[in-house]
Length: 262
Length: 358
Figure 1 (tube, rainbow over the protein chains, first blue to last red):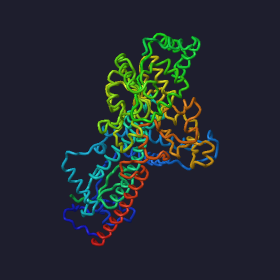
Figure 2 (figure 1 turned 90 degrees about the vertical axis):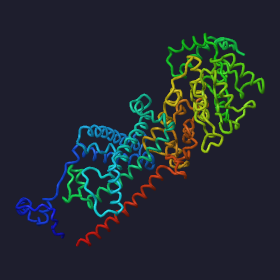
Figure 3 (figure 1 turned 120 degrees about the vertical axis):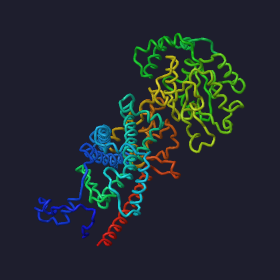
Figure 4 (figure 1 turned 180 degrees about the vertical axis):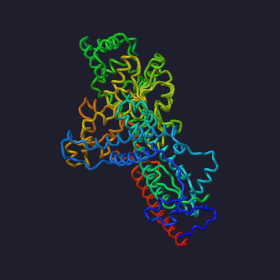
């Protein structure tokens, strides 16, 4: 175990075991543990609406990917009943459209929250392209992922790399999927229906709806790839970075593992 | 050349009774999806309006549109050609040939400036100054521009004129170009299909002559009355799609039972046409009814959407033809593999650091 000898650390006049008396009640807290409690700090980053949106979104995306894939490549033909009593494809499509509707409403609510929520709620919707520091930090974070940096930095919101991934895959990616998805839904809903009125112009651009199907399908794979990277990076950062990751999206608090400055 | 005579005059001259004429008007109203109140309007229009001259030109095409047109049952093509329109120039249907035919074209343009309808079958190739399609000794694109200059409206017959069809499929060596990209200053109605359904063709003409205006068009410039719904929306096999009952092989039991052809690459879900309602050959059948999926012939670039027998179609831009699923799976595998390697490296690095610190 590393001994606490850093002179930068504030030395309390009262011994730590007395300050954190309550923490000793279970009897398993070592002196180092108590010192660690004193040095850790946390920031409330993700407010409840953001967290709820995240998990609802995750559920919707999972349903959408599975059902969407099955719409493109249906299950083996099923013949357990007369067609009139059987609705396999119908239920799959219903789940897809239902999840798509929830995702869309959720996304609109999330945009609303970007305006009324805290500063971090806004981060996903823009990239500070005119901020030179962003690029510098972006390169630093890239170097951290390439094992070229010994120690990562502390970030309260998204790190610059995650910030870019969020913006391109979620903000732009989900928007693309919603627009193409609703355009495709509008085809079935019929001309003059609300989805057709709002998003039918996509068909006018693509000319052939088959092209939108293909793009919508590719979009799904982009989100699958994002999900892989997202989950991996969240777990890895939780283990290797200087702050909490996974629990932050549950409690909203970003806790830091040390109080060293950069 | 036709003088100013009405449809009614011509029909009566051909021995059609007033009673048959009124029946014809009712049938036309029904074919156009109009209520009974429109029957007297149609009758009135046909009694008073002069026949509209039509010039029908042919570019790069296979004449399947003409072949389809002459098989129209409601109304009969002969009624359209002989009674309703004054088909003043159509080099495949007219009796005249050579210089006489070209003279007829010039006459019609001169006489009815701004009042004739130009029907275009096929499209002009633009490469090499249009030398890949010569009509009367001149590139077709010149005839098209000349005839379009004074036309009231243009009908783009078939996938060729509407979208380019097979001659415009990649790599399109002759640079075959759909009409609306060559003529940009005239109202154009696209009647796509390879060929379009006969009744759709005559229906569009009847509508334009009867009401003296363009039919309501959709976003892509197609008559909404025939192209506003997908084959899939009105397919009689749709219940099998919703049930999840699919043909998996051409000779399986599902094929014999007439299940959904979705998995066999049917393009019904992405194709806007009236096949599943109007059907072909006087309503006898249409491709899906005959056991073959729709190939999407009335859609833009249908030759370039990979196979006719695949549901998830190919993407040419990736050099080799691969489907969205193939590309997606390959990329996911690469990313997944990279993540695994990165995770292993991270774990090693962390272990190494711990060893150093210990």
